Amino acid sequence: MIPFDHKAFIDKVWYQARDIVSDGYDQALNHIKELLPEMKIHKYPSGMETWSWIIPPKWNLKNAYIKSSEGKILVDMQDHPLHVVSYSTPISGKISGDELRKHLHTRPQCPKAIPFEFSYYQKNWGFCVPHVEKDNFQDDEYNVLIDSSFEEGELKVGDFYIPGKTDQEYVIMSHLCHPYQAEDGISGISTVMAVAQHFRKTQNSHYSLRFLFVPESIGSIAFLSQNEHLIEKMQGCIFLEMLGHDDQLSLQKSRQGDSVLDKAAEICLEENKSPYRVGKFCEVIVNDEKIFNGPGVNIPSISLSRSKFWGRGEWPFPQYHTSFDTPDIICPKRLEEASQLTIGLVNTLNENYNPQAKVKGPIFLSRYDLWVDWRIDRELNQKQEEVFYYLHDNNKTLIDIACELQIPFPILKDWLEKFYEHGLIEKKFN
Ligand SMILES: [Zn+2]
Image (cartoon, rainbow, N blue to C red):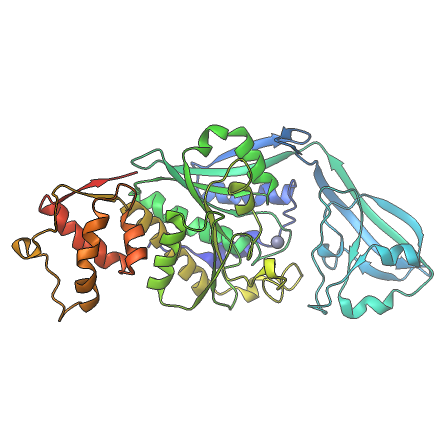
């Protein structure tokens, strides 16, 4: 694997106001383009209709505070920009305490942190404060300011494409939005970068690979709606995020649940030897995979993360969507593990083919020195006869056989390679 400096990358892009259409987001995407100069940036103007969704305006925030009626500053966005709900509408002047308290957000699960809140598609405003400070807001009147503005902007999607031997492609992606959050978003982006840099150098992929950097959900909708012709070429999508904090890996399966991509991911996680969890579609992440595997698109989409099961009501990780989601909770070693795993997954997909027998009947293994000695590999010895049946099934690939017969993929691949060398099978690639 080509080394990638996760720490340097994360330090550079995490502390930016990466709201979905914003200057901060654009700066982060431009940094990615410096590292992947061939990357295309697609631009979708505010107000544009993409399927049933409208591209939102750009949001700017200049200043914001809450003052007591005596003029004492209680909350100041200069202290931390997360104090303001992302996409807040402007407001200024005196308001009642009751009104303020309706617009005050806290996170009891992470009581000392400022929560990250947003209201992208409903016009609203709000402030975020640590839960432990909630009781400080009991006055009857306050002075508030949110000096924000909306303007025509462009939603941007980064699209780095590496052509393979076939134009059938796999998508590897993460979301670049979420202001001032490191693990939620940027850890996934950093992992996508490491995988992209690897295949950019090696240029050895059978499948074409498309690396996408998007604002969550709306970016995927915008891209797919304007590139519908690509949908039939997309064999699968791998969504990566929340991969750097201290927890085990979670595989979220595709909606299909039994696609080649699902099976390949389980093979690679087994080979990786670390403990991992497996969840059903939308049980762990509920993010862009929901668009790629969504209604009318239906590309098998898995996700790799270290998230707990959001879809079962658990918090993905303790600092999730708060001011405590910083690079301090990210360990580059864990991102390396995730990058390595994803590269291994792409390689497994690349090595996959449909083995087709060129002869009928059980194969005379001893003649070709293919008989597996039970003293050396008892398991494969017992399964070798069963493999023959799969060689006459047009729909079964190496990945299917390895999963169904529980044979380690590399062992099956090496064994069948010898069948190929002896002219006993042919390889059909997708
Ligand atoms: Zn999030």
